Image (tube, rainbow, N blue to C red; front, side, top):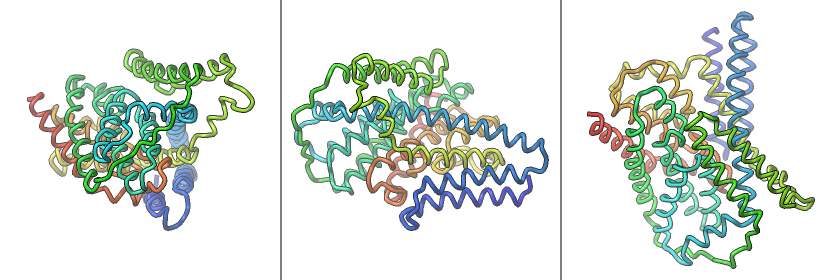
Length: 419
């Protein structure tokens, strides 16, 4: 493909990113901007193809990209439908009332939120953990600036929680399957990752001197069908982890199975009635989030096809490996970490165990630095009023400090266990 076309495609990606940053200025939804440039980029590649053979390569790349997007969409649809149902039926609200005391200091509440997000995302996927955690903090009805602090912590903690589990983060699984680290090395990542989350919680807690009052109303009655569906949701999460680990079954397939069982159980209990049909909960999904994902992944797929991501491996020949790994973490806030990690693995880089552990943490948690850098951030941005690219960016310094601490702690631990 002609170099001028590649430059145009890169400019289009930059323009899409600028549209996200300037959303509050131009008053145009970020989903519409990235979807436009994502679709246009592939149109340009088809029209600029020099011959039919190259056009066939573009078609194959697009098919692969669309397949990845479809998997993500269906997975989001299933998880969001479960959470929408449980939230409307009061199960999440009841859980909060049962766990939290009537009065608690805001600082203690912040640390409890960090602990919950970290642990829950180690068990469930990041999207589900974010949806549940956001529902929790929104139910507290705090003032906007405090809610934004909690939301920022949620994104960082959720991304940190799954980085040590091969079922919790795709990039961790990719590095493990490439035989770069052992499972015991990965599990050790939990300690420094948790320490980084607690550091960020401590930094964000400055100025939180008030007390949160949990206004506990009478617990909403939970019907038998609601308990059964909650059990199906938990069983689906557990099965997804085991199925991925034992039989390499894609998580989307497991969650779609769970969703189908949920629909049938609702029908069996006569819950699927005219005034509250179970399929209507799909309408409660934030489809703007799905469109934003679509646009972003189209753009990332385009950048991967034209070789921009593979070009990033040249950084390892220009600077120390430790610094290059840290920069990969920063770049994962702008570029999807899956193709970024795939490009690094394909380049067959020679690194020590400590350096591979550092890279695993960097690409798994680095997306937290920007709100658009991870699925958790995008989901949180779609659910929390006032959480935008710019409001999240105000905490960039604190996020970077916590990320750098976690990265160095992981590298140091890697030197101990790998040396």
